[in-house]
Amino acid sequence: MVEGDAAQIGELWVRDSVTPMLRELLVHPCSEVRTLAAVTFNEGVDHGPDLPDDLRPAWRAALTGAHPNHLSHHGSWRLQQILKHAVASDPALCADWFIANAAALRWTSRAAHTVESLSDVLRDLPREQKRRVCTSLIKEDLLASGFAGEFLATDETLTEQLLRDGAVDVDTLLSAMSGLRDFTVEGLASALLRAGVSPTRIAGRALSSRQWTGSEAAALRNDLQFFSALSEQRPELAEVCAEAAGQLGHELDVATAKEKQERLLGW
Image (cartoon, rainbow, N blue to C red; front, side, top):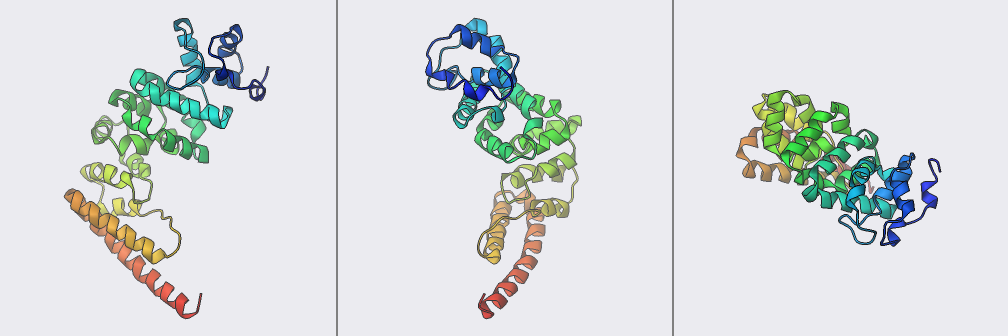
């Protein structure tokens, strides 16, 4: 059996007992086969056999290397459920999985989907495991996998510790901001200000990307409302919010004039 053959095996979790074949598949030389075998067990998910204690070391090794691309849609869902269960029962396993798979998830749509589906796992990891992931990955993998935003923007204590220890720098924090008006602005702006980054630079990064449908002017008004609310909720970010509002106000004037002209032309 070689790479690509795993899809022919079928859904092993339909059986409720550990067969000799399943034992062999769990330590098979082919990573795709090991991945399928790993998600077969009913660890935090219905269906499939119980995991015997003697197979747990091999199972942990196989699951750590389980790449979503090697699984069917349902198999990938089982992997997600297993990791969500493990965040409480075996958080080190979750951290091992994130470390092992960060590079493979870089800048792909699957990375975005995986991070979205596992955001609770990333955020609920104990701080020492978050720190281990952050310090084990190179900067490019930490950022491109999407893990940086989930870890650093949701745990200000961790962020301060990593900055103080030199494990991350302000450029990493700026890059961890999505560029959209979301949790990464509130979660990282305070740490950046304390690290000496100017409100202008932070606001520029917070406004570096925009997604909208329909009226651009309406989208800009929503962005202005975001920063107005943030300024009220987090007074220490008032300068950042004011910088952002100034830029947005100019863009709103331009967009409003453009849309008015388009209406006059019947577009």
